[in-house]
Image 1: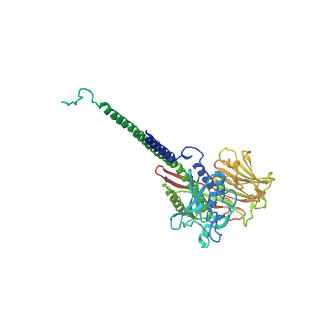
Image 2: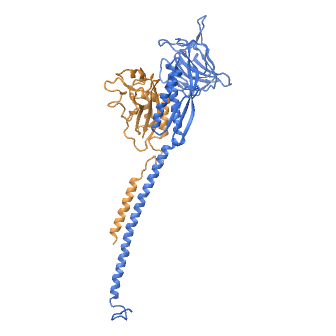
Image 3: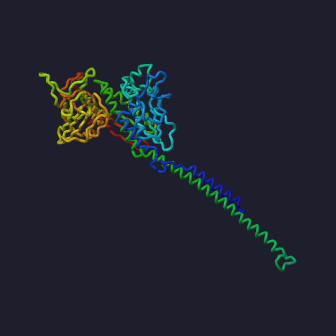
Amino acid sequence: MFTLEGVLAAVIVIVALVFALQTVVVTPATSGDSSAAAESQEVDSALKSAAANGQLKRATLFWDRDTADITRFHGASEFRYYTRERFQSGDYPAFLIALDDRFGSTTSMTITVHYRDGSGDMTSQLLVDGGAPGAGAVRASTTVTLFDSDQIVDDGGKPTGTTLEDLQTNSSARFYAPDVSGSDVYNVLEVEVIVW
Amino acid sequence: MVARGPAGRGRPRDSRRQSRPQGTRGQFRLQGSRGQLLLAGAFVLAVGLISLTFVLNASVHTNTLAESETGAVRGGDAVTAREAARGDVGALLGTVNREHDSDYVQAFRDGLPALARGIRDHRAKRGRLVNATLPSSPFTNGTLVKQTAENGSSDYFAKRNTSTGSLIGNRTIMEGTRVRNATFVITNSSGSDSPFVIGFDPATSSRDAWELHVYNGSRGWTLEVFNGGSRVGGPCRPPEARDSVELNIAPATFGSDYCHALSQLNPGSPYNVTFGNGNESKGRFWMVAKDDITGFPSCPSPGNICQDDALYGVDVAFEYRSSTVDYETTLVVTPGEI
């Protein structure tokens, strides 16, 4: 006798339940579970360690200016930056290999170098493009100061003898960040790492 | 007066017939109300569920925002910014010492505003004000003591007797001071029987002396650390054979590899720096002493120990401001100090 009302009531409740279940955000981070790809402190620690031992600076100077068509990071194919997710073997900056070792194969990362351009605006150069950050992404950043006397490094990480000042004065050579100061300071970079 | 019909004395004739339809309509009305109640209840339940969802989501979002700002609120971000600034200022100090023979103070004064602006621009993106400026009397003068090779060759760490020409292997390099950025490149050494010894002897305190023994033995380049005559930890060796080895004391690296025993080095302050068996080892070194050192010729003096004025350290006024944290301190920057 109340079939119609009963069915309608049941449909309303079921629709509300489905909506509620679909809408509630449940992620490892929100539940307090430690199974997130990486902890923020861990990424921060990796960045500080790399800054202290010089790996981070060498990664920012891992620049191949001799490529005929386009200047880019050593070994970067197609783009100026790396798009692969693993850096276990090959000629990559030691910083990337260390991050790969630290966070393992189940994580993705995007690394961006921010710097000031010739007009004084902030701009960016990707070092690693891992795509759009997923759920539970954590970020850390630190500054790296480049000086006129710093040398770009070869694909083995060794100084090439070519300083940033040389690159700046040689119109045929290009480095992604310009010299923005008349002093010994060349540019101040911010390296931002996002891991998820 | 109520008019009564012909049957006014009793119940109306059709009263039973009339009451039945009335009772059925009431029943229908009650039953219809139950159906509406069911629908209304379902609607209220649905609205409640959806409201709960919104409340829960808002809570999760608030928690996430709170967690992301926790570092800034607790001052973690201020400490991170301070240490990053310390590293950048230390790098500037090293650069002006290396690139400028005499005008290094002015070079530092010129470089710091550019450095501070770069740091300020990056932090400003996240709503933080970070600044680094020079206070009055910020510089601590020192002396760069080094032995650099000419044309890639290198010389003994020993002192040459000017009259006889013989080599004096054991010598004191500096007394009663403190050094930073001490780096050695050893290109030639005898075996473990006569290692090259770098000593740090406390000048005033009763602490035990520290010695670093470097030799090229049967297993390649080896570093052993001694404190008061007892070996500290195990020996350190680079992973592969090589012609020369670099010993960098402050970051505790030997042949670019971290050496745990070297990280234990703690001679206190002040101390004397000595060399032993320098007549059996060749190489280069450089370090910055905290005080004015005398006794060596001015640089350049290829193949011999020479000295130059240098900046030992600098004090920088550091300022950090966010919506929750105001922090000001003076950074004492002496990179690589032992």
